[in-house]
Length: 304
Ligand SMILES: NC(=O)c1ccc[n+]([C@@H]2O[C@H](COP(=O)([O-])OP(=O)(O)OC[C@H]3O[C@@H](n4cnc5c(N)ncnc54)[C@H](OP(=O)(O)O)[C@@H]3O)[C@@H](O)[C@H]2O)c1
Image 1 (cartoon, rainbow, N blue to C red):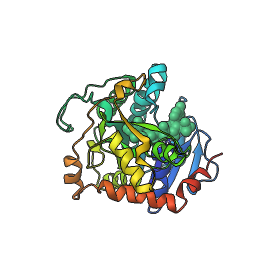
Image 2 (cartoon, protein in one colour):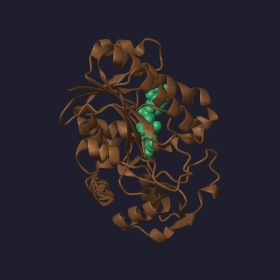
Image 3 (tube, helix red, strand yellow):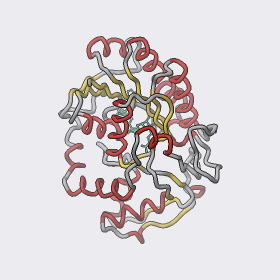
Image 4 (spheres, rainbow, N blue to C red):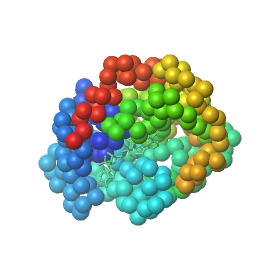
């Protein structure tokens, strides 16, 4: 299949492209960050009028995976207009052209559409209650996609991995700081379900191959606090876990509100895929193996 990936320079985009290119023809859309990636890269500003149509006239993809977003929660609070353009208007436009051109569309959303006040895990049936601009614009994006293209798939995700800038994921934060002997805080009151980006990428391609449509929770099968995640990363990398101080997110000074409980059920996904979601420990082993094999340096070498 020919797959077009927007936001290909992002944490998910680059890892997804690297994984998908083994079995599919990948075309990444980038604003100019990538220079020597091992897949085809188109430089384009997808927010510009008519840009998407001209990209599709040129490339004729079978699938589009939309990884472009304003995914920094603080930046969304500072610039709600740009957050809406990227997180709501862009997916809506992509979903519309995909429906018109008969292209399968997969859009990325977030676990944080929930405010986290539930004691239990959230299913796809639960009513979202976004706590801030990022989550509100992402939820609006989901709804716009569903409205204009009911065949589209939407994945609510949370993941970690190696990024181009070496700073995008929480796992990198812990590895970078602990490697330098720095003290860091780990939130004990934010529960989430981290999935290794390579497992996520594999599942997204599987969803397209199986033609799954509609809303799915695509997160790790194990819930843990961000503090516990830091400890697990430290242990796997042989770093000092006692440099991580347990702390409440309420004392973090972050401007955008964080949800306390983002424990999402993956029951619908594993049922429709016909297999379980990979274990957290398997993902962390994979993340560590990449480190040993120089993968972080390799992908950083693709930057301008
Ligand atoms: N990381 C997580 O754990 C997490 C959690 C929940 C949901 N998600 C969702 O998963 C998806 C991927 O997230 P990510 O962490 O990979 O995000 P990311 O690393 O911030 O990447 C975002 C991508 O969007 C591109 N982009 C930003 N502004 C753009 C613009 N004006 N025009 C075109 N492209 C633009 C960026 O390009 P530049 O490099 O040029 O800026 C980058 O390639 C997003 O939908 C996000 O909301 C992520």
